[in-house]
Image (cartoon, rainbow, N blue to C red; front, top):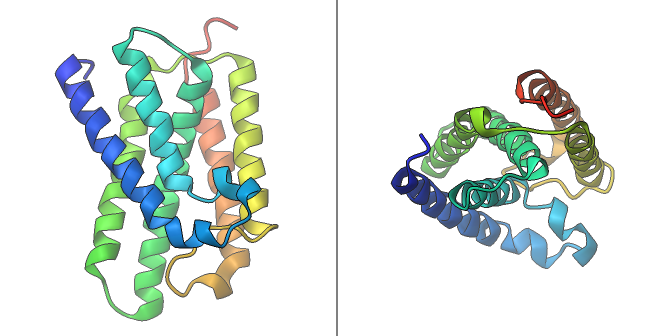
Length: 184
């Protein structure tokens, strides 16, 4: 798992996915106030955290806040996108190739979070800053209506916001229970 060649391949794949993700959000970002930019492209920001985590591993460094942000956002936004694509298929009545690609790539995000779990070592403050980031992002998305636009699901914004809240709670419980917190 921590073979340098494997990590470099993962880094390249995730870097390319991150760039693609930010491009994907280009239309939405073009009409988004600048101060919301960090909170709109959720999935590419999650894979950006993973890219930073991989670079830190390659440099033999650790930073628990990046570990915590990568772990939680990869799972939350990976699963969120899988659920939204399936919901979109149901809503439109058919399966799309782009939707299938998004399901596979976002499912891979969640899987990668667990692949890096043995590396993750956090302190309590990393956990609390991560919790603030995630809940703040939910508020930006569903109170300030900056959530990712996809398909025709906007009539279900309240239900999607409720789902996002519970995904935040679940990933924080996973982080608290599964991450190494020996140094606290």
